[in-house]
Length: 97
Image (cartoon, rainbow, N blue to C red; front, side):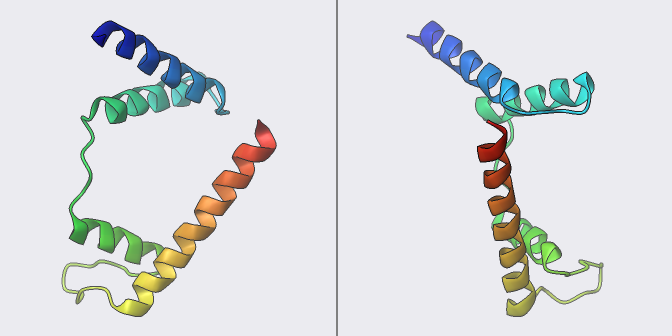
């Protein structure tokens, strides 16, 4: 059962890599390594506060050492920007494949 899962995982990784376009082989290889690490659970989800700061940075928050925590507006702008990025990604995947 474990072996079958590994084969399925490898097939999924290869399918994802084949369905993506890269400028050169180095980027493809690096993306493959990152996907593999993600799939194996090596990459853990960041804590909530780090995720909120990253989201706020999409909305224009600078995250300097002495800055106060991000506010609602900048988090909302970041969420809006993230949604635009996701829509663009989905459209690119649909048009390219």
